[in-house]
View 1 (cartoon, rainbow, N blue to C red):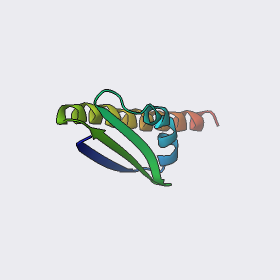
View 2: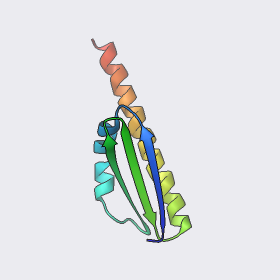
View 3: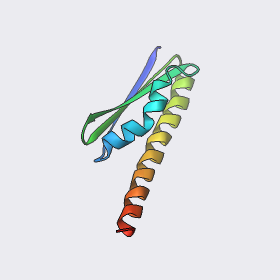
Length: 86
């Protein structure tokens, strides 16, 4: 893989988000790219994308960034739902 992108996100929910995206990370190489996600610390999440070419890198970045966004939105939604049920 010739191209690489690494993104680090500061979020108090790093562990939850990393765990929710683990199945995608464990899928291995998909097409011309591969991605991984892990919690760097309690408050830091990192995604790493490797790709054969720039087109594949862009497509993989779009996918992974969207997955992180969706996971964060779901964490916030469940937190709000938990607060209203108390």
